[in-house]
Amino acid sequence: MTLDEIKASDKSVLTPAEVAEVLGCDAQDVRIQARLSPEKLGFPVIIIKSRTKIPRIPFLRYMGEQ
Image 1 (cartoon, one colour):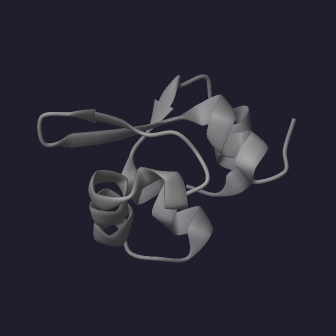
Image 2 (cartoon, one colour):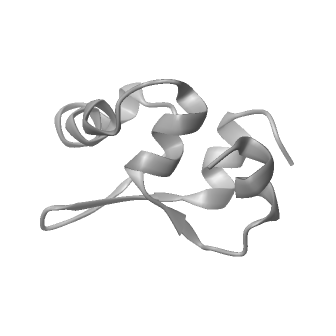
Image 3 (cartoon, one colour):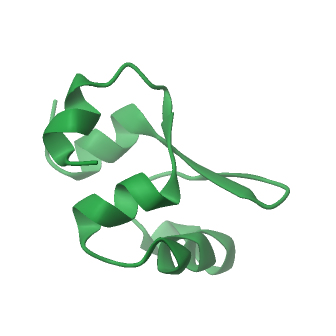
């Protein structure tokens, strides 16, 4: 997913794979960082059991949008 696609989306949360595409890194790296040190990501994350979700609007703000 590109940043423009995320902006146009109506999803409330994103997956690590979608965010990793924009950040240019591996989705597993996002998942690991979210568990070990989420404050270093710069955007909020939600961890539910083994799932990691990223709120779309705060992520867009982190990327300098909106």
